[in-house]
Length: 61
Image 1: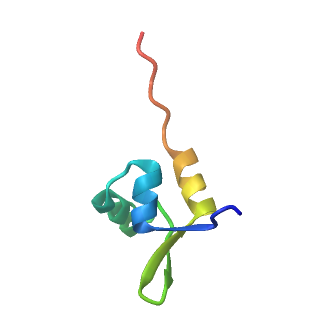
Image 2: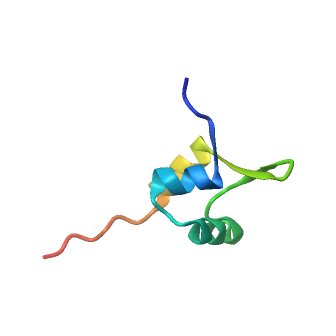
Image 3: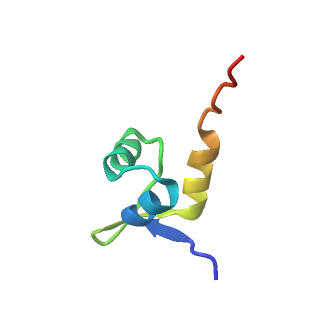
């Protein structure tokens, strides 16, 4: 079964992005998050959209 949502710690683990940066991205609106009671979750689809929106690294000449 495919996981449909992630906790903040799980997002950090699968992306390698730190917790502070994840919260900055959420607060800036760059990464959508949802609340489930006190828990903050990020839907897999929202994480995929965010990652796909990142700029590509320029090739060196």
